[in-house]
Image (tube, rainbow, N blue to C red; front, side, top):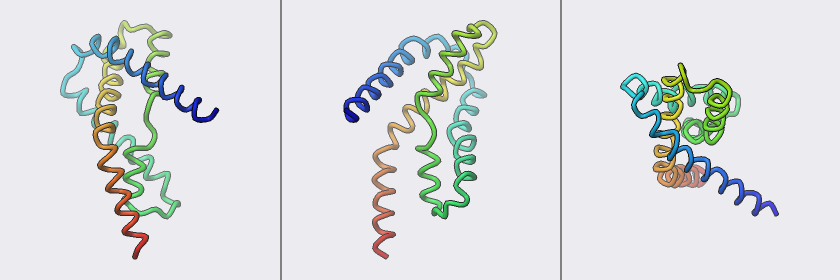
Length: 134
């Protein structure tokens, strides 16, 4: 039952990202510029990783673990859902720039985390295995 629930949840997430990519991304591309790109990149790195690092101060983890958790830590479908709730509540008029930054951040996150998941996980796993041998 748990495996089914996890598989169903994953399917729903994939459908939401599909709709996100097909419907929302094309409608905000015209609002993207260099400022939005810089903010999106900062949001995916400093603005997310720094609070994670601060929250892990007492956990006695090494920097590699903190970096790994910070990069792959809190992210995901919540941003898309919050955006959809904001659109439903506030509408789009007057909030186009703000919403475009959220969409750009999520879009970059999907690609950056997707492309880096396997190599960084394998590297982290090897490093942890080597660390446990010594």
